[in-house]
Length: 478
Ligand SMILES: Nc1ncnc2c1ncn2[C@@H]1O[C@H](COP(=O)(O)OP(=O)(O)OP(=O)(O)O)[C@@H](O)[C@H]1O
Ligand SMILES: CC(=O)C(=O)O
Ligand SMILES: [K+]
Ligand SMILES: [Mg+2]
Image (tube, rainbow, N blue to C red):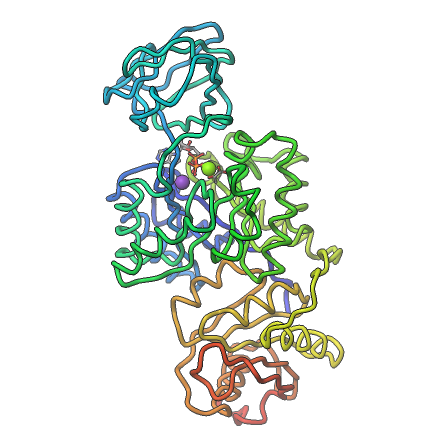
């Protein structure tokens, strides 16, 4: 069988992805997860984008998950009346909490308490640190600042205050509205920005329960507080995104690479998916080829053991969205084909699912099985298999379509939707039908199956079976 890519690709949606042809191009080039960034754009446009993703995935016959990324407690500049501007070093401008349409000299910000929480001398960083200003005076709602590092400013750019503890709530009114909207729309996963504590997930769950729909919640690690409580956050949330854009502003930049490695390993130990994000192929926003350093960055994230790598501006507003995805896919597959492997798990799994999956992958390799197969109703067993990064194909079977979509984020997994079955033998019949029917293996080949028996009892993983294909279904009938 052809070598397939194992590390998944997340693409951020934006103006550059907004046509059926472009979207299909992205899916065919390898997009596994579409990220809708609620920091930008109108709900109406997000709805349209959602439809485009679902239609393209359907047309291409690929599982594509949709991730709704909530803005979280990020302070942003407001909008300008007259387009992007440049603030030059030495300029004096005003950032105000008054709700105005901005000019080059005076622009609003989204956090109305900001003038009360900054002091003279505080440094504010705009757009992931591309522009820096220093507070020189506060007058009512106006913060007077001196531009210390000039650069471009435009609508909705982020404002970070690295050493100022601001009291913004974990979930703003806008986040709550966006979350309800995303859940109703049908997104598969939610990401919460600027997570500071494990308990931040409770606010999200509360809204989800009010809407009657819980989906996995990814913690975006981009605050020093999150780095401090990383393990507790990994345990509380369903996955992690290493959001290096804000992380590199909020934390000294030189600490970002090690945080990335620690987060990836912690997620694998806990069988939670992890995404490495931001600036991975940044220069491809403008250019048709990435830098050598960017190619290495993608490859190194693969070798760290990440589940997924993410594209941001490269796909949302870049000149070459489809080419960027195919370039990323190529770097990933070439790196994987090198066979260098990833760091070992630091612990010996003790849960039934954990122990059975370790045994399954070892048995599969030793007997020359063609694939690993997992039956799962929650996806948990599948994630426990995925984290081992076994070089055999990994096929997941689930009767729950939401689970199929969320597994699009997990390393190396291909997922099939199956019927609910009553008897254990029916599970193996489904494996035969799917694998022989799709030509994934031949009659007589062995696969190693991890499942719960009887079927339909979530969390009951107790069965490991070496199964010979074609023994339950007459090969002539598939
Ligand atoms: N839907 C959109 N409409 C207009 N501009 C967009 C849109 N999405 C992204 N952009 C522009 O592309 C830039 C990069 O996109 P990206 O999604 O990485 O946003 P970001 O603000 O850096 O992310 P985050 O807020 O999650 O840290 C944004 O800063 C914005 O200028
Ligand atoms: C993705 C994101 O939010 C960041 O890198 O900051
Ligand atoms: K966001
Ligand atoms: Mg961010």
